[in-house]
Image (cartoon, rainbow, N blue to C red; front, side, top):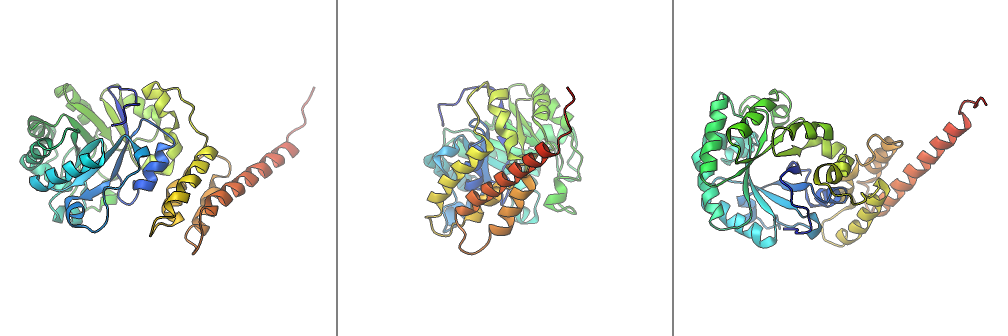
Length: 345
């Protein structure tokens, strides 16, 4: 655990997102916010135990960082939780929210909402092996099990096993008939149900997830619950995290500018490109939205997208993209200065 962080009873976090929140993404986001809790992509117990790659790799700079684990066998979950603790993760989170067919076939994800006893058994087994928090990320319901009573039954049974932290995506999941993408948009958001959970279980730490677009949204939710998890908005507009530390953690440190963040990522890329199988695009793709809402944002995105996957390109992708952005911004300012209306004295 990173003991330099200010202890505070609220959590602002970035959602685990498959194919998105890899180690490069997390390092990048950590340049913007020091306190936001970051999550790995979901990693299955099978990948960790039997896979040939290192699925637990992360950079020490990523703290606080949590491993999201997919699985349902208590012994395997406990084994992976122990490995995560040994590697230095700050938390292990059980995925009880992903609705994809592949995940269901592996008997984990959202389908486990129908098996609270299985989740409870995993919690007990994992907590017997580790000291770090073991948490659960779920939906508000699945298929026809979507009444508030179904949700409270799940939460109550899992909480009785020793889990005291839940991140709840405020949409139900349809396990049949909707794709994972559709499950992020079509089922309606029902924030009130998550608020009611906190009222009914005041001793639990409850975070909410789903549809959060702004930090004002975050502030509104924090009137009712303990934490907010932001997903796709952070990925498309990562600099939204720039005000998190000051606004929600009372940390007044100077947040790096977007330009300084690019320079920090150039230094990071220099070390990463020395590793086998790493290409600059693996890093740069997470940075497409860095200048979202700023002059030249489209030019920045286009330069990275058009040049990032070319053979042989290296860290100059980032430096050249920044030079191109700076030139575009300079030209735009020159145009505005030249065509400004005459001032009347």
